[in-house]
Length: 166
Image (cartoon, rainbow, N blue to C red; front, side):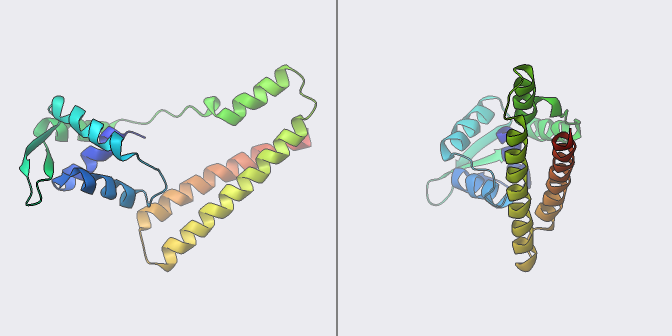
């Protein structure tokens, strides 16, 4: 995830002060991706330095207001149009499994079963979160994102089932 581009997205919508950027990010991701406030402010400063943002003034409470520049809009739109390269084979569990195979790990089956249990927990948590969002009438976009994540988890489950049968 690119904090830089998340900030550009929020400021593309409207100018904000730093705390509004932080809370806007938290709202965007429903609090599921923690973002350190210090990271927000250092990224804001870097974006101003790189002329992707401007800080023309302060609000009535002396908070620095940030707005996106034309250069920042261009960078944000360029980023949106780039395809995302996925590195599935760099997945930490896949690497762990390769290492286990390399050393003929005696507890490989147990390792796979524990991973399956972890996936079940993740599927349950995401399903419950999706139901909560639906009940609250919130964020169809986040529900669609959860659907995508669940499909990936289901594929991982199928792979684990195949591996456990070997």
